[in-house]
Amino acid sequence: MLNRAYRGILLALLGTAFLPNAYAAPDAAQDARPTAAIMLAQTCAGCHGTEGYTRGDALVPLAGLPKVQFINAMQNFADGTRQSTVMGSIARNLSAKEIELMADYFASFPENPPIAKGSKP
Ligand code: HEC
Image 1 (cartoon, rainbow, N blue to C red):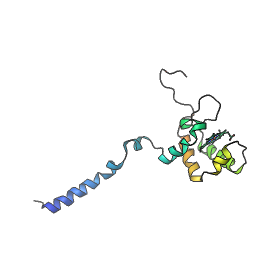
Image 2: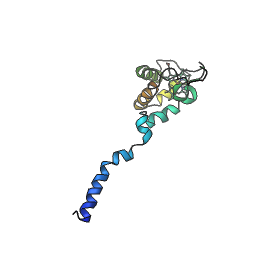
Image 3: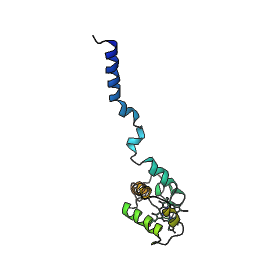
């Protein structure tokens, strides 16, 4: 028979086998978008809409913008190659890493918002 200490060690080892599952948040697996990207993108939502979708055509939607196009636009705003009203100062204050995170984030949405069944287009 196993003595008490040995059994304790065995149970502890068995327990660690399940640790990765215990720590993974349930929605983390379903939503691959990093939290940092979601938070950064929220600073753009006032003008570019939630998840990059705008209502009407008054402003530029970012959802579905290809990654390369997004990064080029931000770099061109930052260095003044592309004229802008507000985007120059916004782009200059973002790091390359932050821009890349947002490029992946906005590119991960379809260009047109999915229309809920029964809602008006
Ligand atoms: C105060 C409103 C405002 C906010 C906030 C804002 N934008 Fe903009 N964005 C604009 C406007 C206006 C334009 C058109 C260019 C210009 O005049 O600056 C634009 C254009 C762009 C474009 C070019 C789109 C295209 O199709 O070429 C990108 C990319 C962009 N914004 C990204 C962002 C990101 C990323 C953020 C958040 C970090 C952000 N914007 C926050 C107003 C805003």
